[in-house]
Image 1: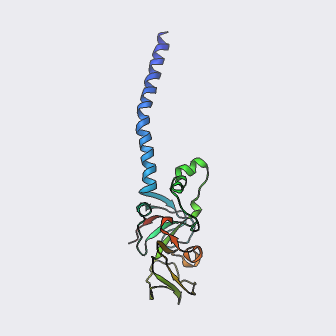
Image 2 (image 1 turned 90 degrees about the vertical axis):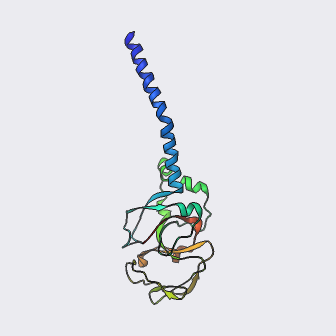
Image 3 (image 1 turned 120 degrees about the vertical axis):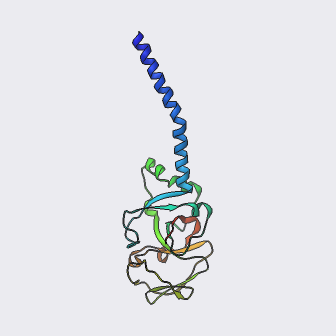
Length: 195
């Protein structure tokens, strides 16, 4: 009888201790979700479109403040974009696409997120000639690209308001704005500043 009461007392102490930890654990969990949705988040580079700057399977951390406040990135910044440019993004997307909730649901949507470099901002006129990128009539210096670009076009690309134009550093092996179009600012998931 005495042993049973003692075991019950120990059990109650354990339950009480666990309860005391539930609040801080819950707050920590909610805070970590908040930070990764609004402040910064890790992403994994998939493929070779950013060679030689970033490599396949490399992890990068991006600032989400640009997405949260719709800030315009600088030329040359490395960005993570939602490649589904023909659909509206909602706040629900930010929640559902969070790695924790994807893990619970058993799916990952990393293939929709591309890591690219900002080449054009609203109002810029881009041309692709002589195996170079021309922005507003001037060839831009790009020491980060892997090799000479094969792509050329007679078209002049004018970046619309609230959009950016992005390209991979491996220009000959990159699915970017040349294929998917201009990127709406609300599809800009985060920025990794480039020196």
